[in-house]
Length: 447
Image (cartoon, rainbow, N blue to C red; front, side, top):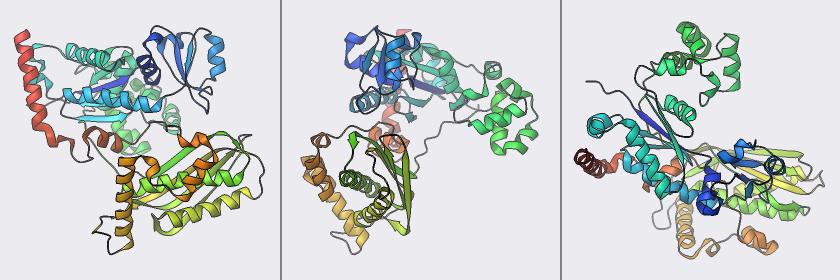
C-alpha cells in the first residue's frame, strides 16, 4: 500500500509580539506591537491580533501605530529571548515526529506520513495536532496555528487559512480548497510570475487548473508543470531536509547615533568585518567578493565592492580591501554615518582541519580560529579581540554590549542548534520511535 504524504506546518502567531507577552504576562489581553529601529520606536516589526484589530500593521511607523491604538503597548525587541523561546518551541515539536524541518525562527514542517498506522488508529489528526498546540501553549507560552496537507506548500496555505487555529486539507479536497485562493498566497512566487500568470488570465489556482499544462510548461518550464499539478490537487510532495552551504554572510547595523567621525565609523566596520570573517572560517568557507554600503543621516547611500583574484579567508587581506573601499567611498562626502552594511559572498568550501599547528596557511588559520573560539567560549567574547575591536570598545561604551542581531538565521544553523550537528537528524530515529510507541500505547489504553 502506497503511503500518502501528510505534512504538518506549524507557525507561531505574531511571534515577536507573542514572545513579549510570554516574557511579561501582564501584557496578556492587551494590544502589543514590537518596534524596530535604533531605539525600538522606528517601524512596527510585529503586532498581535488585538493590535491588528485597531489597524496596526507590520511596516507602519510606531508613532502612527500609537495614534490608531492609543492604549496599545510598544515593546522594544529582545532578540536573544526570541531565540531561546524559538529553541523551546522546536524542542517540543521534535518530540512528535521523526522528521522536523525548521523554516524560520517560528515555523517548521513535520512529517506525519506514517501517523495513521502508528498513532492515529485511536484518535484523529485534529485531536493530535491540537494536543501539540496545547503542549506548546502550556510549556512555551506561545500560541501557534497549524495546517495539515499532502505537501509543505499546501500545508502552509492551510495554516494561513486557519489562523488562529488548525485546518486539515483532506485527501481529495485539495483542488476544492485551492479553487478560489489567489496565486499570490503561494510562498515564494514573485511579482514577475504573478504578472505573467495574470496575463494568461490566471488570478486564482482555479484559473491555473483550467489552463493547459503544456502552456504552463512552455511559459515557466518545470515550475509551470509543478504549479499545474499543485492547482489540480495532484502535487503529493514528501518532506525533505536539505542542509546547504550558505552563499553569503552579511551584517546590517544601524549605529546607536549618527557618527560624524569617519575614522570611528571605519573602526566599527573593521570590527564587524573581523566578526564576519571569523564566522566565515568557523563554517569552513572562504569568500571571493565583499561589499560595503554606507547610509548617511539623510538616508542617501553609497556603496562599493571588491573581487579577490582568489577566494580569501584571512582578516588582513579582507580588512585591507575593506579599508580601500571605505576611503574611496567617503572621500567626497561629509554627512554623518547612520548605517553600515557589509557582505561576503561568492563563497566556497575551505579545508582548515589542523594538524597541531599545521603545515599550510589554511591549517594554521584553522588551528588559530579553533583556539580563539575555545577561549571565547570559556572566558567570554572579550578574551580574544583584534585591535579594531579593542579600539571600538574604548571609543563608545554602548559597543561594550553590542545590540543583538535579528534572529533570522539560515536553516542550516537552526538544525545545528537543535541537534548539535548539521548531519542527518534521523541518526537518533530509533530513540524517537521508542518514545512514539510509548505514546501510542498510552493512547490505546486511554480509549
